[in-house]
Length: 89
Image (cartoon, rainbow, N blue to C red; front, side, top):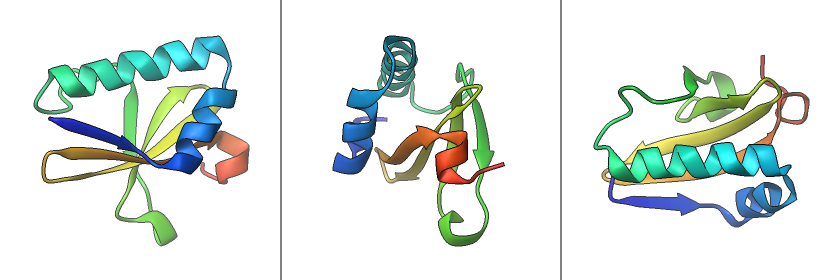
């Protein structure tokens, strides 16, 4: 991918995350920027259903999720929060 865009709400949540989560998100973003696709991606990716069916979720940690979508060459990060807050699962 050539670009990563992070929604301002997601950016706020990332800034509030623990250092461990921030490091994992940094690793994820570097992988996205350095690779053309999501093969060999270091985190599990799952499709979403319902309201967010155009998005997918990345399981960054046992209890931390990122909602994203890919459009053209841009990776959009929409939501980042804990599993319980996002009501996924």
